[in-house]
Image 1: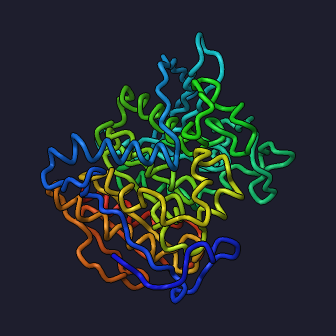
Image 2: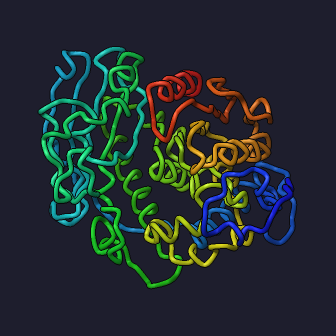
Length: 410
């Protein structure tokens, strides 16, 4: 696909929100090997093109996923079968990653419906401000980790306070998940990486053998790695059907969910909500957030090589439709918000459209219509998309679409 417009390097200082200024671009072909060979069979995709693309995303954007020989130890901190008035079982699990229960650790909060019969399909996602923010339950452990300053989230002096209990319950629709027969598993992203640029000294990074190479993994890679460690535990939890775990994320954590699903094929489904640049949106549109703005504000999110493409977005050897294609043939859902131009809703939709050729090759169904849908008009097959009214957020409306999509696929 080729679009007409100005040059991308003219749009690196101030964000572009004008479709007429979207630069001319041509997307890389997900079904063409680096040597020019056409990928025309599922075998060629799985054996050559998929590994090739995975390497390119690691080399140029997120950094290579760490290969760490960790023997996790699991500690049940608390559990009750009477959560939410008896509707659910709550379990709080500490995943020790250091030797002999030494730091670092990840704290996983799990809610499993008491009906229907277990094991159940489960949504797994990172949260922004601690497990205690997900539901107003005084039993949930209050995180003691560093947090980004946010008085509205009950964070004072970079630490959580009791005022934050349940403050983001609306972002998780826990009751509706339980009512519809789904489990929820979540962990605080700051357990894995505290999301500030400190040279990767905190969280899980000391476990990784950093080489100093420009393709060493960044924060998004560490977050994605931690989601896989959470899935390791869910594989032994009798309440969870580990073959039906959907990884989900909003905003920067939506970027993470997509990268986690691309790297770890155990995830049965992936959901990206308002993930924008570095998530579902096409880099080459240079609309809203761009490589320049992202690498300037959050240089630690990706590998250091990524910043070299600031103002040169079209020179990336990949684009984000190929990230979605790496999840094929597993179902993937992309959600956008009408008042969130920073995340480029049209770019997110087009990414879902152009991933479709790989889904078709693998016998799955692409989006049923290449025309961007109206607000509150979800479209889905094996790939799903909706545009919601409102701003940058994850809402009960979004969750209802995700659960309906999961009803069909999980």
